[in-house]
Image (spheres, helix red, strand yellow):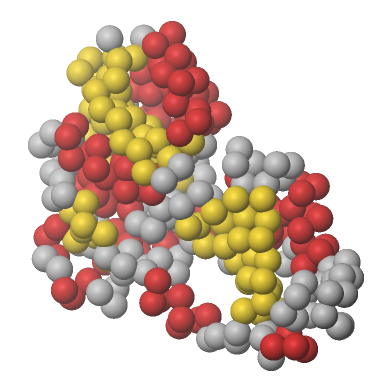
Length: 293
């Protein structure tokens, strides 16, 4: 291709044949279409997606059609912004670890196993970020843990809805909860959650339940605290079940909410009789601690 010549459809400048690169790097800013964009990336053949703030980042092997991937994203996630470029060949099985750090969040630190030895075990949550069911690398998780320190009380019974890796359940236990129910509907996440609970030494206070949160929450009630890091539409549907499951002075922490949804969520909370105890915002995400009026 000569200088000034237009790149044909599905080909971008700096192709593998020109640069020796072997991976197509794709960065998506999905806006309100996050779940659809994630689905599109996996449909296009991605084997793993990394969340960097509001963006989704992944890589495809040499020979991938950048144009086709972009078109699929625009079709399945309208409004998403897609950037692609060819990147040098890297052993991603190890190189990704360079971008993972320990996160100091007040009374607790989240650390991957290879950094955990540098921190106090009593206040460190050790989570392998290579497991895709919830790590400290996402702002929503950090938002809940920051708010949690201001609302949890000694001997609380806690329900963690959509527990994933059980990172929030572990945090609650390390902050003094007497018992935590880690509720997760995805059976593939359960072994990872149980492994993390054992690794962090809280197996006697955290129990994993597989099933739907709306069904299981009434069965473990009453609780003094509910944690829910889930998309906003699911949170809204679960609010009535949370209200019934709580003690009179119970609290809830909600996360997984985009900043742009804050006004809508505050309106829903007010209409349903909740008051705000505290808020947290990081990157594109908003978290809130609430209690019944």
